[in-house]
Length: 171
Image (cartoon, rainbow, N blue to C red; front, side, top):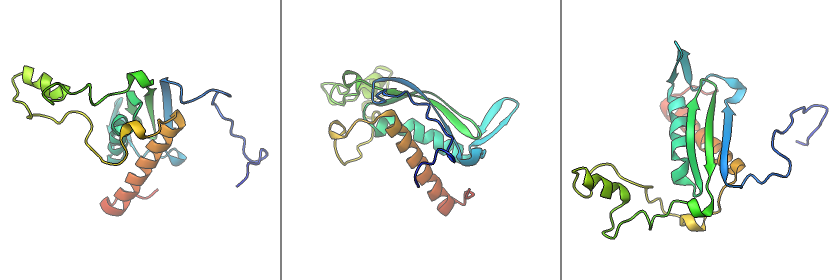
């Protein structure tokens, strides 16, 4: 479909000429299709996430582990949209697995846990899970539109799986 200015009145809010790969903090708002309240409901000022809302929250939390150079900050799920802060890191601030390990091979989390009376190797797993594929250093860094695209693709895919396998409502 080609762009027809007579029919399509939507105006981009992106800054012309701005490079959205530039490191920094970006505020992101994403609405559900047709602004349907899929993510939960609010009662007495408290948000109650539905299973799709919890899934969206989980995908958001996984972004830094899945994509190098991406970190997240504040995030809130509302009935028909989400708000979040994406932090595109500069190369010198990126998480480094080598520096996260001590000389004994323990991760920083394991070393800190040992200081709190836990034996080495016990407790919660620390750091990203090994997922195979290309090493993080060789993967291309994402732009802000790339992060949003990946987030929307992951949540849409998981929603479709849940419609097929868990009986979630198809919208």
